Amino acid sequence: CTTYEISELVPCIAAKMEQLVPSIDVDNMIDAMEAADKIDELNDYKSVAKGLHFSCVNLARQKFVSVDLLQNFICKLKYRIPEGLKLIKILKEESKATFSFDVSLEQLNVGPVSSPIFIVNNLPWRIEISKNAINKRSRTQALYTKLFCPKQNSGYWSSRVSANMSLLDPHGVNNSTGYEDMHNYTAIRDYTSPKILAGVKDADKKAKDNQITVVATLNVLRQTGEYCYPNKKLSDLTDADQPKLEDLLPSFKTENDECNKAVKVEEDEHILVLCGDSVVAVKMSILAKESSVIRTKLSKVWTRNSAVEDSNPSPSEVMRARTLTIPEGYDPKAAEILFGYLKGFDVLLEHIKDFKLLEDILGLCDFYMITSPLEAILKHMQKMSVSMDNLVQVFEVGKRLSSIELYKAVAKQLQSNCRKVAKANLISSLLIIKFITDHETNINTVIEILDRC
Image (cartoon, rainbow, N blue to C red; front, side, top):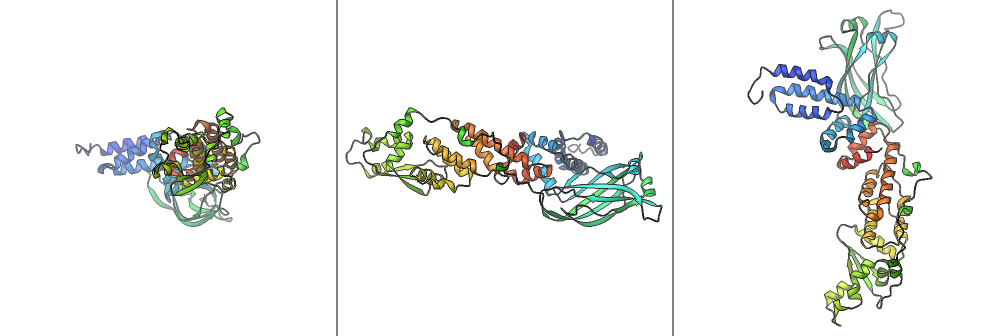
C-alpha cells in the first residue's frame, strides 16, 4: 500500500491490526515488536506502530512479573537477543508508563479489587480499587484508589512518583474524571493513602458489561537505590556432600613425573622467564624438574648436543638458551606467580582474588605440563568467594577451562556453583531484569546461567 500509494486501505489495516493485539503473548511478543518497528518506518502507519509497540510493552510489564515467564522468554531468545534485550531495558529504564485494567462492579460490592502488578522503572506497581462512603456521616459512596509499590526484603530504595488515575468511558475516551497525585514511596511506606477516583454514579455511567476500565499513568520523577540481591555467597550455600575442586583432578602419578624428579643438570644457571614486561629468573634445575615440555624445549642448548655443535655459541644462541618466552595472551602476573611458586614462594597464591588470574595460571600449567602447583591452586580457588559481584566472570572462566581435558570436571563444578548462587539470589523478576541489564555485554553468558537455574 505504501509503495503504490494506496491510502484507502489504511483505516482497514489499522482496524485489523487492533483486532490482532489480543493475540499477542510472550511467545510472539518479539515478532510483534519487530513488526511495529518496520511499520513505524511507513509514514501512514505510525499510529498503528505506536499502538502495537505500546501493547507489547504493556504485556511485558504485566507478564514478566512472573519469574518463570521471564526466564523462559530470555532463554528462548537465541538469535534474537538484541530485540529481547531492548524490551527488558524498557522495563528497567523507562520511567513513564500508562496501563489499564478492568474492574467488575460486582466484585467491588464484595470488597477491594487489586490490579495485576506492572513493572515500571524496574519496580512493581499495583493499584487497589475499593468502594466506600465519602465520610462516616454520608451515605454517598465513591470509588477509592490506593497505589502500591510492594516492598521486598532486598535493599533500600525511594521513589517520587506522579500518578494520574482516571476512568475510561464506554467509547474508550479518557475523560477528566480522576485525580493526579504525587507521593514518595520507600521500602518502609510503599503505598499512598486512599484517593477518590470517581463517584459511584459516575462509575456506573462509564461501566460496560458491568465493568469499568481504570487507566493509570505513572511517572517516576526521582529514584534512589534499587532492589538488591540477597547477597548470598557460595560459602552460605555449600553442602557437605559438594565435591572440592582439588578432588576433581585426575591422578598425576606417571613414569614421566618420576623422570622429572630424577633430572640432573650439569650447569644450574638461571633462566629468564619472559611474559610481557615481566621477567622471572628461575634455576634451570627447577624448570627441568617441574616441566618436561620446558626441559625438551631448551635441552638442545642446555646439553650442547647436535643443535649447538660450536663450542663458542653466538650471543643470540646464548641468549636463547637463557630465556623462556611465554606465549602472548597470558597475564604477566600469572607467570610471575606460577614461576615464583615453583621457586618456593607459596605465599603468592594467598593474595589472589581474581578468578581470571587463576585461570591463566592453570592455563600455563596445562601448556607446560606443570602439575605440582595444581592442588594448591584449586584449594585456593575453592576458598575464593563466588557471589553476584563476580558470578559472570567465574562462569566464563569455567566455560574456558572446560575446553582443557585436564580441567573438565573442575570447570563443570565451577559452573554448577555459579548456577547455585544465581538461583539463591535471583528470587524475583526485578532482580533478573537487573542482572540482565547489568551484564548486557555478556548477555550470552547470562542466558546460559539462567537456562539451568
